[in-house]
Length: 561
Image (cartoon, rainbow, N blue to C red; front, top):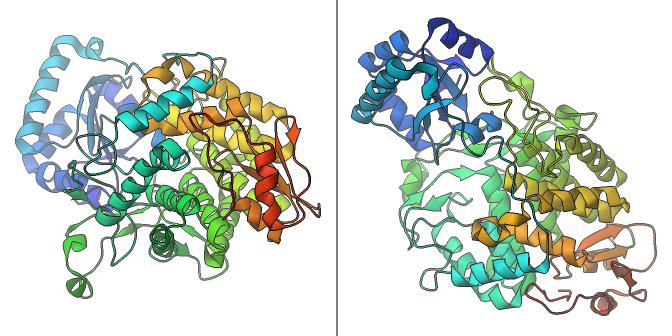
């Protein structure tokens, strides 16, 4: 249990079957509090609400109280989060939802307690319900080029021409949407203007790293938490912007964030081992001018090493190295992957975080889709950028184990169909299905094994029936569909680090997979088409152009920098 929970007056239990059994034995509801170590609103609710003696007494008398760290228990988070943290859910002893809310102050919490008590007394377990997303089969359909064309229209139609970004309310950086837009001529201006807004408003120019999001359309009202996965995604987005435009500001922003990740968020064991921490909390510290920060203590870092987040950072750092030759980024990516593979992967099954870091009674899950998908992403990118059999062999093992989560709908479940509460109900998250499909497309190109591409096609097809309703928040789905429909560009090169290999990595084509090998020249392939061999870096662009797909809604610039 985290320190903040221990400082409240509530007698919290860890998530697990024992808590639900206790609720069943007492015939009372469960109060589930889902928090995050980086969440300032979570700390505020602890201090204002859960530290109030009468609230704690009421909860002790009438509820079984359970506390969950959202980062450590992603399957619980996805089933019971109601749109933000803290998530406050009241459950039946079977885990069904009576009601749920976000942050609650003292008065609001007392009101909802009274309401739940009345509902429970009147209806008992029959008042519970199961969220619609659990058990519903995804809307299957055909993956066509229209998926990409629709997303181009969404990116264009939803763009905020005055302030940059998308939407008229809170502004999230949406790095996958930025990448989608940057890689297409029709929408590239939307990407660059959004990158400029993110750089101007979300980048911490003193300590480094990006804040999470802004409350308002004009990027004001910042939420200053810094999450490792979100910073990794923004390194990717700015590196992509640099690749397509050559704008040094984008390279500098990505490099500053790499420096932040490899210093403030690096957990070192004083040897060659090390990996990336989970997050850094927000707080008033980040509102101080630089002169005052020097004498103030920065917010705490959650040093938990999560497999999924380290996979994403390794992917981002490898991509940054690919377009800049930044050696430090490559070294840290290798060290993080080595640590995760040695400590958290066995037989291809990935453990979410080190069991040694678990609290007493805390469950550490293995075999989660989010870990398999994101570690696969880091490994396939490392195989392309760094070369070496270890990354490719590990990617195969992780992918093969992850394929066990694909069901007869074609989609991947988020983990084993077992566990207390609603964990035994299947959940097929779109975002993570996109990530695993993207990694499988890369792996198919790297290995020549069509079974990986077929699995990716099934996963994408499982959601294609809803493609016309998707917004820019899931632009990555359209990217993956475009890669499937059009065949990815594959560039086979000499070993990693050679001039031809480095030139291939700098080809600005969003469907590209670079396959370093033992050949002396380079050749570009797309489907059944192959170019003449390229013997010099200057010839890479010609080779790619020979197999380039026709201009379409997503056609990129097949050129090298």
